[in-house]
Image (cartoon, rainbow, N blue to C red; front, side, top):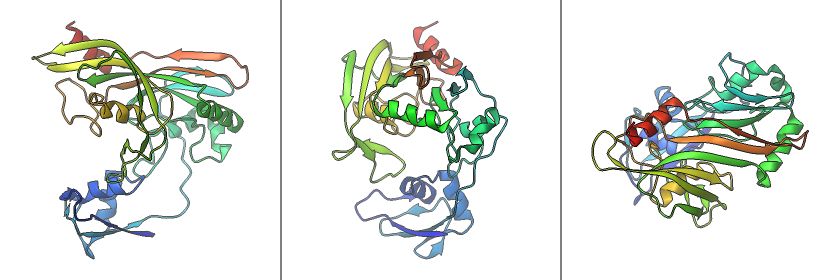
Length: 311
């Protein structure tokens, strides 16, 4: 086990639940995983075991024992995949919201990687912890994801991402009426020093650029869809974690339904963030042909737009 000691300093925000405190401070640790460690007696506060609901105070010393050792190889699981395109070198899948891309603490099964290993068993011989994964989507973001079947192809596609040859376009519904109707957000991003599971605009962060274009705007002063909303295309020019969500929140128009960077509640019938990777373009590493794919909004997101349009 790896021992870590954490402390909430005076002047920082206090009275946060212990499980949330650990999930925010320990990279890769989910809240549910933190709760299990607390229940197993692997966490103490000021030398004493406590419950997950304990409110951490400034000056508390929190000690946690984290499992160490080689991570177990992911296993194949017969999980349905929405395959948009496939050949002998790669495939494009339409990931549903709620699915984690690869195994991580707190999410060791039911991931896209588990499904891919069942769909393409040869991936298991790649020697990768995240076999075939070229890029990622957040758990609650749906849409197109590119997967490589061979290591050489994976590296070639990753080079395309690095040199910005890959084009990804998202559809996002935002709180408020965004102006101007076209724009570029240039704000460096890094891990939030106070909440380690989140990201933030930081002066010394990594370069991050997002272009957007307004598609529709909705003003509803009252009723079941009360509020002002803007539907946009968002195109990240860089690939930072949570980039679109953090950038849009930073300009005062967070993604609707985003419980991390946005408002906690919405009047809309939405159980997830309204963010969908709807368009993907890249050059096939073998043929040299530029491929373009689109996937429609999932039914739950389309229903929200229908409500806003009054249909």
